[in-house]
Length: 77
Image 1 (cartoon, one colour):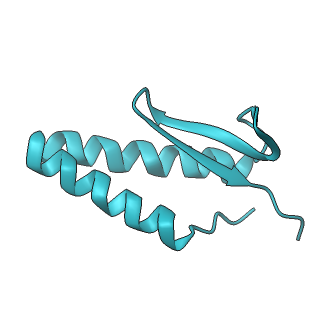
Image 2 (cartoon, rainbow, N blue to C red):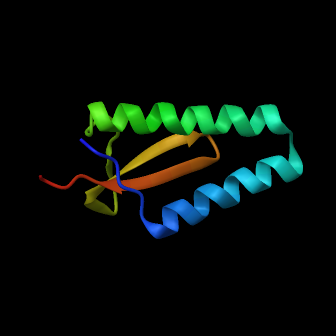
């Protein structure tokens, strides 16, 4: 399965990276990027790995970090 990022997701990702660089340091930013890549790979291989979102079961809620979550939808190909 291919993970396709929405425009909003891309913008949020860049904003998170900029925030980490501003507040923390390059190592934290790099760790965040690696974690995002790891989680996207997990979703690509196991799309149902995260639980369905309680407010709309068409979406799932995933986690990058305890303070960073995201929502995604599995589309049939």
